[in-house]
Amino acid sequence: MREWLKIAFRRDVCLRGLRVAGVVGTLLVIINQGDLLFHGQWSIRQGVKIVLTYFVPYGVSTYASVASIRKMEREGGSR
Image (cartoon, rainbow, N blue to C red):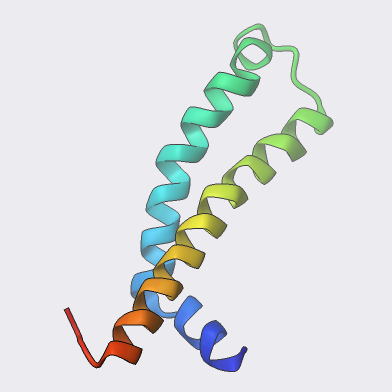
């Protein structure tokens, strides 16, 4: 677990996750909350949903990056 977290907090992994979260999260917010935002009908509840929407792609990207890095390390490659 410690090794997994060490990789997950590497600068390159975090930056990749943030980029993915920025793009995918924004698209998901527009799809799921766009009508409320454009009509000015948002609330604290929508704000929480929007914040959480960005965590999903960040988590998926981080998980995939860590899995890929660990696999490459086990195979002895550094592509």
